[in-house]
Image (cartoon, rainbow, N blue to C red; front, side, top):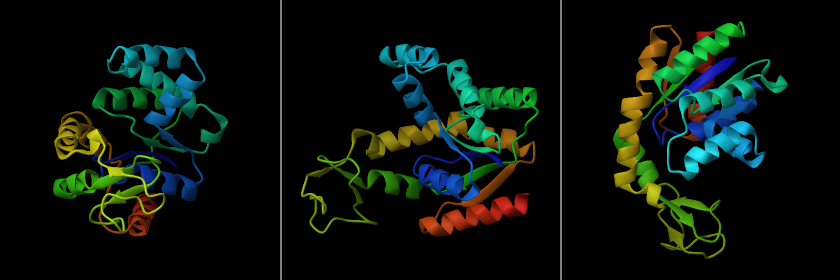
Length: 217
């Protein structure tokens, strides 16, 4: 299957993308991973992307698209892939359509994870991360530490990252609504969108997604 995963920040896209890709035996292709891989390998595209990032500018669509094209042409993606974070806007979606058409491929589904805005803000703004190890993550409501402000694992200080503040989360949501959300209508016009609720336990959401994708086949 060739799937695009969309949804607001805090909907659990990263978690669900990993689980769905493993279950469906297709690679999980995320924009962040593409950037990191190309920059660490110092590819021409990586150097180009880094030059924009170092200057504090957004990486142009054509660079992101070229990275995605290169990754989708790898042998492990022959049987399908799951795109996470790409396309990010309608122009990227149009470019992806053109790319797939030249390769005689097509998307099977666009999986839209829905979550109420209030829940999204609560999920992200409530996160607390250990200063000693960023892999130790807690949540003030859902997974609180035994002692407030102290990591259960190593005793380090728990803090709220700047990009997890409510103000920043609401700005990220605004960007999502204006730039990324329009691709849902774009793909609805092609009959590709499968919408599921991102509420509930992680296993429940994964099961819901797999069932919806099965029905959409």
